[in-house]
Image (cartoon, rainbow, N blue to C red; front, side, top):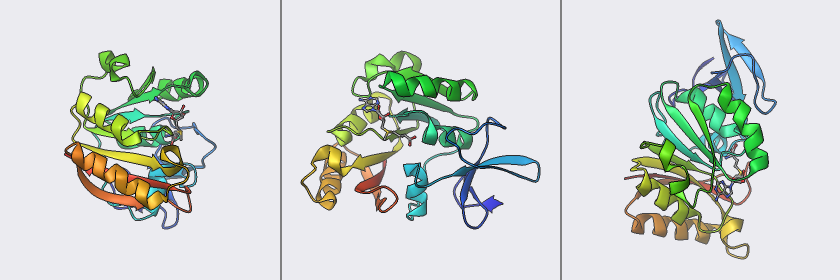
Length: 216
Ligand SMILES: C[S@@+](CC[C@H](N)C(=O)[O-])C[C@H]1O[C@@H](n2cnc3c(N)ncnc32)[C@H](O)[C@@H]1O
């Protein structure tokens, strides 16, 4: 096991892993591997778009050990738990609108001291601003129209400095060529004052999805 070249991300030469911050527990059925007394969780790129981004050649990686991350669309915590493994001295504020997914998210957060769950709507930052003091990074993965605008609203509300935005092309316009949808998102983010560092398509691991990496 050795570093994959990104902070907190490891590889055995073939698969990706993060250090398990809740040893003995698996979140979505991923394999647990112990190496030199440390337990790692396999990070599966067909289950997590952040792992798919790394596998697809994404290099802009704003997560550090002390990062405070606002994670919008946490679902049941698959990717958010890997983020929590990476930001060991930081915090992952997890926002999820679906009560059903939230029920599965809560025990994942309870097992990790640095994950805080909010049952809330990411289009309404005031619903969770009481518990989020300011963040370094916004990570967003919500399948809803207007993804770039929702991202910008949160980025500004919490004075973030960098971010990763998943764009699901079909959520914007099912009939439009995904490449045009990604360019439209780029324009909106730039018009909102952000620098777009990378746009990485996640196909075939995630069909018609791209990750847009941004900074102030
Ligand atoms: C594709 S899933 C997220 C998967 C997750 N990011 C992962 O990798 O483990 C999208 C999630 O966004 C949630 N969602 C959609 N609209 C939302 C909103 N306005 N506010 C918060 N969550 C939302 C959905 O309920 C769903 O759980």
